[in-house]
Image (cartoon, rainbow, N blue to C red; front, side, top):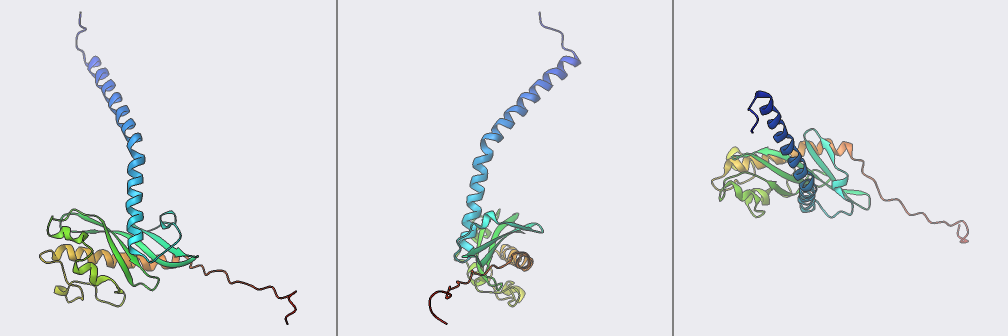
Length: 205
């Protein structure tokens, strides 16, 4: 004979269901967390490699947080070759996650778009390395050059029919430059150790 439905029984049943669901969610998270983190790290490392000069360190292991952004210093033989700065800008369809690479003097080396929500066929072209904003920004120094779109009096041509996305991209570059300036003071530039020659016993004065 079935027990009569009471408020207490309903609460108990719902509590058991919630516990089971929570356990299942926890299990799924534990299984997927590792692969998701690895995929994200790979995406970040690929973006770093694309935007800074050659390096032999592991920038993702030396990451610095500056304000709400992340800086990955790249170096070769102990000498800083560049800084990859990860920033977020607001595009037409939502946030644009991007990586901007600078040489030590503040010149833009290259850029990489990590993720975006822009309109396919229009703003989504921002992922294409051959579009004018991404080509023209290379070699520019935001501290010297006017890196706004030509419609606003700047030096950079916008994507056709996607001025809003182009502006967002360039604002991201400008924001990255401000972060870069702060990072320079935080990351000491190590110089290679000078070789010394022992001449005490070689008969030379």
